[in-house]
Image 1 (spheres, rainbow, N blue to C red):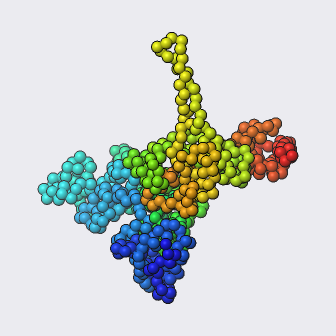
Image 2 (image 1 turned 120 degrees about the horizontal axis):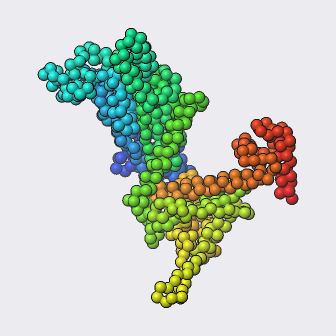
Length: 636
């Protein structure tokens, strides 16, 4: 492969103006769309020597056959044009939104003569005011059921409304008390419009005004001994409290903001958008993204904001947008959003207080959504079968690897070295067959991996004898050799790491006499798959089910190793401290929580130890002396 692309523009051809660029393949299909403040500076990164490019970027530029660009007058115009082309052409190397389903909204058809409230997934109803999105349809219906007790507005269909107004007979929903429009023959069109305005005002965040008014009316009616009216106001107040209770006040009552929690790995990202109006979470939107190119967190945030507000205008764009990381294009995005809103907009990183807490909650939900996305992919039978078949083809195996074992090494600054073995059978985790190993003496991670694999492979030849009574010959026994679960051979070993780790694992397989077992390593940074005898890695497609399977196995091995290492460290620390007279479990937990480790505790002075509640000068001196004596003994 040539190190210079044939379609690379000549020096000086690319302008230094802001603009949008497009990579096309030989058939003219747009592969990737991007924007730049300086087209020449940006595109020069793609035409660097191929060996220096990220693997996914290299695959994109080698797939492309041409590049073209469009110069614009400002960064905002570049952002608008990039968004329009991404929506129009859906380039395969741009981020792709997997969860593209439409969410249910509450809509009030303000353009109608008598506006109605309805549940819809259509976000393009002329003149409608939308609230949401809601995660579930039943949540919208439940909210409407409560609110029409306080704000009885129209709920019937347009056909029912027209028929009722033409005949002078209430619509069916009005007859059963489910519709409060003019078609119910209880209010005029003008009175109904006033109630609709109150409904919209409440949903827009003016909830405190209505609760105060209803409370005052209830007290006045009660004082006047109009108990029926007081009971009506009480029921309406309870209905509002039910709605408000389902969307707790998370920020100041006058706060309108969208909060974006983001969780990502090398292949995917999950986004949780909390829609906060009047200080309350009025809606939640969840999105899962497939990442084709290696992009930074800031670039991902840029794409998420474009996606969220590309079709928004007016109050659909909030006063504040809270994100975990500010993109480099934040000034351009702010200007773009302000043009759509018609008012001032801020993009911020919440660092403290209730905003930071809400951002942390959104991020936690995004992490759970990302894990669920991976689990759903791995639990689907068709997907698992495809993953194993793809893995067999990519590695050139004779059969699909039905049993795969993954290994990872964990340590803390070179101490407390442990390793993990996780098992996947038919593409599913077999947690009952996980194993952990302690490594007493080692030189580095490759040596640890070699030792652990030698110990694991030694069990492949083990057989456990089981004595079975022969029912046909009384008193006679038959000896039947059976394999223990740890002795079942895997078809594939996966180690966390690149070429050095794979070579160490291959040496363990040779020395154990089990070279028939396939072996690969997966490097986390570029998701490269390394084989023992190859100088270059195997690059699996980013959408490959095989790559998802390997990534999940590698992550599971890493998680299990870290968990075991932490448990062992905690057990060792507790053992050391438990030998000190006067230290019980409560004080040991307090010391560990405050200092974090025995090493840090050893470096503390008696005065620093004494600062903890419940530890006096004498006990602090005892702890310090005991740990100092233990360190001296171990150094000998």
